[in-house]
Amino acid sequence: MNLSDALHDEIDSKVHITHIRLLFLESQFTKLEVLALDNNKLSVFDEDTANTMCTFTALKRLNLAHNILQSLNFYHKRCLTHLEYLDLSYNSISTFEAYSNHNGLLFSLDQIQKKSSLSVNFFGNEFACDCQLREFHDWLKRPEVHVIKKQNLTCHDGLFFNRFIVSVQSAEFICLSGDSSSNRSSSNATVDVLVTRLALIAIFLSVIAYIKRETIQHVVSSFKRQPTVKKQLLSNYLSENNENAKHGSWNSA
Image (cartoon, rainbow, N blue to C red; front, side):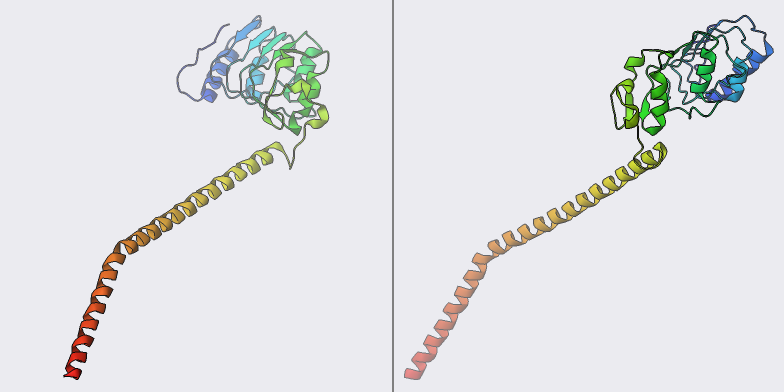
């Protein structure tokens, strides 16, 4: 079943998921082996969606590429036990739930792997390489895990920007303070403080420039007034001398 590029309008993808779920639940696709849902801007793959997928008991290939999924759970105890290929490339996955969460993706994929030869494609996701990605890194390096282009998966956030995930040592995946979300919050706060400081510096420099400009204009005006002042002083001096001369001549007479 090919539903690639089927959902082109601006309706919230949650509404589309609901409609697709109703369609699938009302139909019997017990022999469906291939399902393409790529390029549909899907953002939700929750428990209800996973339960819907459980109706496809023969499903072997699931294409969810080029959507905006941030996470998904398969609830392995009931779903997709025959899955052979899962395409999650070019989504919005940045990290994974802890492996100890048995509803999480990594644990679910391991359970499916035990019953079928499963290959997964994560290429094109922007992974945040901090402490929360350590388990994914360790999972990738296990020889029984089949991940398409695993050597080319790169870090798009964190301390190892643009480095291949498998090239980083497990112990290097650290969170500097708290979890990754707090790190991102503190990074955002740092940026805000920096922007505020730059704005204040710009205002301060503008004030200094204004004061300098006013000072220069005042000095120039003073220089322009100086010849006039000198002439006035000289005129006063000559007038005073003339008066003194007159008084002197009268006294002599």
